[in-house]
Amino acid sequence: MVKVKVCIIGAGLTGISAARNLPQGSYIVFEKEHDIGGLCGSEVVNNFYFDYAPHAFFTSNQEILRLVKETLKTNIKEHIRRAYIYTYGKYVEYPLEVNLRKLPRDVAIECLIGVIKASTTPKQNPRNFREWMYAAYGEGIARHYLEPYNRKLWKYSLEDMSADWVIGRVPTPSIDDVIKGAFKSVKKRFGGNWLFYYPKVGGIKALVKALASDVKPVICNAEVTKIKILNGALKVCIRRGDIVKEYVFDKVINTSPLPDLVDYLEDVPSNVYKAAKELKHNKLITIGLGYKSHKNIRYHWVYYPEERYPFNRVSYPVNFSRYTVPKGYSSILVELTVESQKEMRSEEIVEEVEQKLKDARAIPEDVKIMVRFIKNIKYAYVIYDLSYKDKVRLVKEYLRERGIITAGRYGEWAYMNMDHAIQAGERAAQELINEVEKRKT
Ligand SMILES: Cc1cc2nc3c(=O)[nH]c(=O)nc-3n(C[C@H](O)[C@H](O)[C@H](O)COP(=O)(O)OP(=O)(O)OC[C@H]3O[C@@H](n4cnc5c(N)ncnc54)[C@H](O)[C@@H]3O)c2cc1C
Image (cartoon, rainbow, N blue to C red; front, side, top):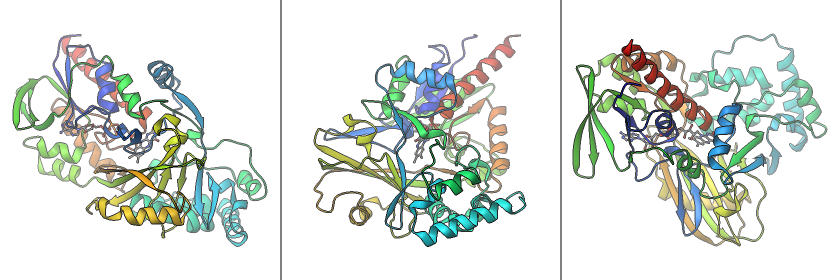
């Protein structure tokens, strides 16, 4: 490969994966935070490990699975998912659709009638996410579970969301399994994450650290603040504390969010700027609590569709790895999404969250909290509104023409999991190598 100088913006999974696939000496990775990992970050507070958001690694791509297993070596544990939905005062195993017998009888009957009606109604293409859930699962399941849960999670009008992201993500059990599950346990696995992996030690960040072991240089506390397009090159300003330095690169691989990128990229045409700024997302507050406990709840995570609970999901790190807590202790990670326009008043809600966790019996009533951890995440879920595809295409094309390859969950504005982010980095590196090879010939 011809020696090119590549600036990689961001040391999350995508940026690290891109760097791994480029020759050393051809790139520099800049990360604005104090450490690598991005959304797959973890922090240790008084010997409790808290992930920035709970992460379970799963994939249907055997090459990526092999890479992750080989990279983590012995620091990996396989899990069979134990996920539940807490509703009507009961824990119903996920997916709820095949466990209707666990619901109160009247609710179960309503759900079952809805599923049967939906399955016998001629299918029309759903115009939005809400229509999709009613068409796929019927009135009862949509009304009692899917609609309240998804309103709480997305903090966005379900009528204005596309159903594109659903395929392959939300399990759609057959009508036979739903009916069977209304009467007895269905012995089948549903959803891609029924089997997942998690590092034994180090939280989910251990995966990014292991993948990054040969990636050099990665400069942390280094924020890209300006990119100027010169003749065939890119001038990039990096801020480290009070000092701003200028570098000239041949190429940029961006993994930072598109709405931020257009702010620090100079001379962006107004239509491209507007398209990037109109991309929709929500925010996330993660609250971690560490406490003394000898009796652990055995679930990995639990969804909370009911409005009376402010959180959409809680998870129990000790069930991902017992090394996430000191011996004799336990912890819980609570997720609350926030509308993108709203401020994240995380400190103000901790007390209410703790009380609601007790009400839901997610933590013991007499619990003594030893450690509190709060993480505010500005970009959490990308939201596929009805026109996101055109906007993303416009922005990506503009960037490509100017020598900027944009990749990853927020760089491509795509609902990516960790395996997709690793692949996105590989694709970005390959695209760059192909371009350079083409230039040579
Ligand atoms: C709540 C939640 C739960 C999830 N759970 C799972 C799960 O269970 N399983 C799974 O497979 N996936 C899960 N994911 C998805 C997974 O976290 C992402 O796919 C992955 O982390 C995306 O990596 P990325 O590198 O594309 O983005 P990021 O991790 O966001 O990395 C981008 C990096 O760029 C840096 N950056 C931004 N701007 C600049 C700048 N100007 N200069 C320098 N650096 C900059 C950021 O600090 C960041 O480190 C979850 C996501 C969320 C939100």
